[in-house]
Length: 304
Ligand SMILES: [Fe+2]
Ligand SMILES: [Fe+2]
Image (cartoon, rainbow, N blue to C red; front, side, top):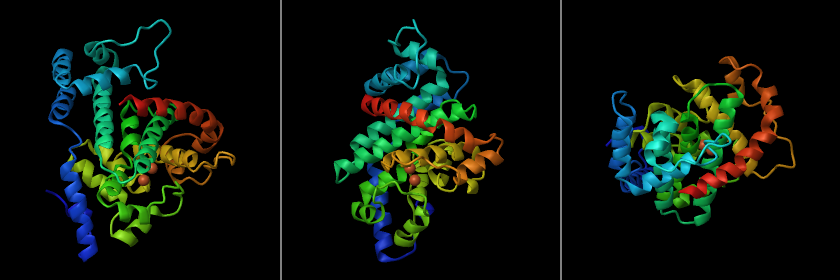
């Protein structure tokens, strides 16, 4: 198994942390075999909808989640359009690309529910942050007209998977490092490296690679605190990074103060990548984005 990516200095406490992370990652399989097979079929342009549906149908939970998600606020229906009632209809309406994303969402929710975190509150707060960042990512994708096709929700959902793994594997280290106060404009990554020799970004990258997740999702986990340093997928990572910042603002519960994004590095990066005046656009749009996203993300987090 590839554990060199954690790259921890060779001290006793750090070696113990690596062992705990590896043990936890062994116990948690993010993608069950059926989900892996279904994703392979989704990526195969020659596969039929029926083949895709047949594989997914072997997993009742996956089937139920895909139906629920297809009828969720993620896919608003035009007036008069009936709710989706069967798997084949869901795949036809969403397309294989979106259905693949929904498989990842279902697997992530299931993984989150199975993780044995010391405190229920940690799971709830981090789960809430995942869904909120996912929904905000979809709104920002539209706002900035980036044209990403559904992957942004999954990326927002998974961006802090390293925090979740750390909270499960090493609750004491997690508590010492992460106050869950969502004040992240300082260098969180450096603070983590100074304390434990690695960061939630590196842990997330390692975990998603180990679970064969697509490389753009791995990049988001690795670079959402420093999108400028990401080679490929810069716009994609910068988008999730902005969504993360807005979700943090909401979860800091500082809504009585205005959200200020004028110095946000990921927005400036989006500007250099061709988005016109993103600071002005977001400064105007953030209250609506947040109020739409908060309710939708709550509904979504209760689906699975
Ligand atoms: Fe993070
Ligand atoms: Fe985050």
